[in-house]
Length: 127
Image (tube, rainbow, N blue to C red; front, side):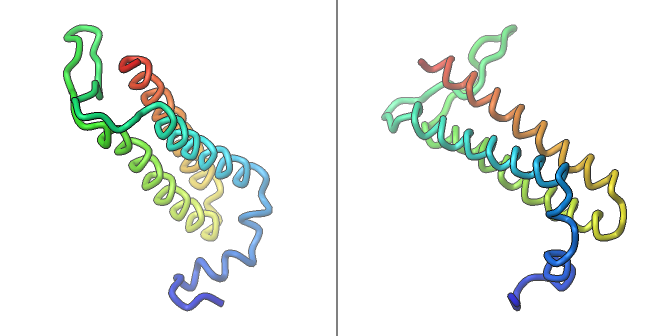
């Protein structure tokens, strides 16, 4: 098959990992939320010459400003987090640790949802 993938990953494609509906739906939902993060930021954040607000605190007000490119850091972190959680979940599923797999995928899903809320708040603060 593919030579550069680890052996456990290649063998796992033949297994039931992707046949498990819970695993499949959580992975798809995480990817959809991450894609929504990228798309929403791509639509609403336009290249500008001035600094935009990156973080707002109720107690202190604006506490972080930066370039418009800096808002794409959060979905990038979300994608990295998804990949790490997905491969760890895949590994634990193969080792018959189904609960650990489900917890990792659910944590990744909640992280993507939290990042989406954070990105929506950045958009609302700036517009």
